[in-house]
Length: 441
Image (cartoon, rainbow, N blue to C red; front, side):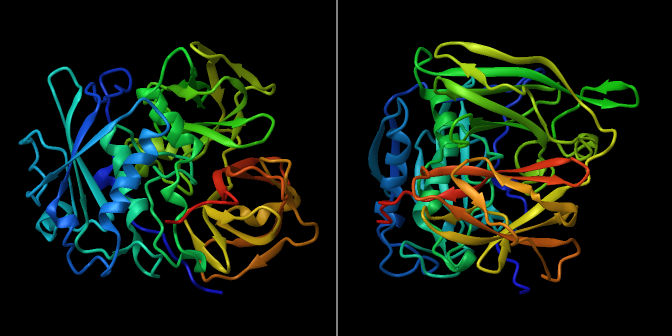
């Protein structure tokens, strides 16, 4: 077993970061409906898109996914244009195009899509152009080696709306899209929005009276003091009852974090370094000393007891939460796998079945079988199945079997690892349980 797939380069070409001097600035559309123009290239796509693919339908369904979960409306129009606007020269038309005319916009990037966003003087979005990479191949039928059109469009529409990349592995907005054939399966799960994607959309376009948020501040203990640069840290929330991952966020350089768009409920909040399966540079953390600092941080639950989030309220999880680096973290999961393949995208599982899961990274060989669990009580580790594997990597790889109960809900769940010394690490949202009656169009 030596196949490693899906580990693309950091997708910084279309990662959107909105910062002012102190905190993130959520930029969004003020216009509703949002007028989107379908380029004529969608009706006569270039040869990098498999003949017979439903390009227009994939784009329409992508828009619908987002409109269905928040106060968002789209008005579709047609355009004879095929090229996205050049930087700093928007034409006011939000174009979706698949034309080869946009090859130069990607440079050497292998990202499947790119969204170029324009703002007015007040920071509101006034134009957002989506292009597919002419150097990559696409299909709508799961052809191995191609990107799924609907999954790519759904991700890019998230950027069109103002969302950044997500640190939740199973989210559509995570920066690394799988090609069809990863894990020997069609890569269709990113067509559907995760709970984290929905929380992001509602934080920008939801009713403040119906959703809640939680915020706090993370500091890193270093040399007897506290380091303020914490841009490589992430916080994510799990439902306390089901274990489903519902939202994630990256801390700002100041250490402040906020998870918005949360439905009222009881949650666990976990803080850990983002310098692992999804690197900090993939999801917005500055490429600075902070990444090295935060890679030493051990994983901690922000509160031992579940915290209650109420609609219309911004709760304080912990005014200041100090994350120690002594002793330093030694568990750094970097890959996850299924069907004897390793990758960086969530493993799609079905309720009522048993699967062999792979995890690779520094320190995973220090994990005892009793230290492996899932965030949901309905996902069980099969006893006496922990095995050391050989993938030809420069870090250890382990495998174990997981049984998903038939009553497990669709959604994203975490794998928890704990070493014999007690150190913990989470693969946040690394398990995606597919809906039993999902439509693949």
